[in-house]
Image (tube, rainbow, N blue to C red):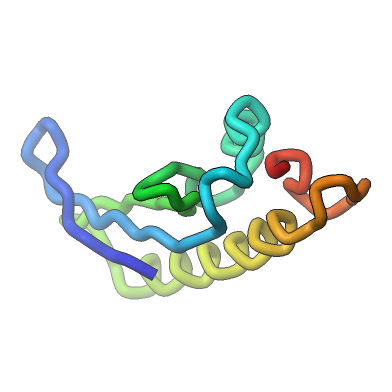
Length: 102
């Protein structure tokens, strides 16, 4: 799990949360874009050869309960994505988001 403050173009501060999903080589690029549109929280991205689930939140309006709910949602979504990433490549699977990995 990672967290860092980033600055938006308008100068506002945002909190970027990231969670490791799997090695980036496991992602199918086109299908990952489809999965991103279906995720209820966060988006898949690649950094340093790793696939990460990333969510940003504005710091100026961030409440503790929103941060807690976001972290809980990221953890649950990451668990689903990690399970899908661990399905053997030649296996048919009904696991959510398994189509995004190879």
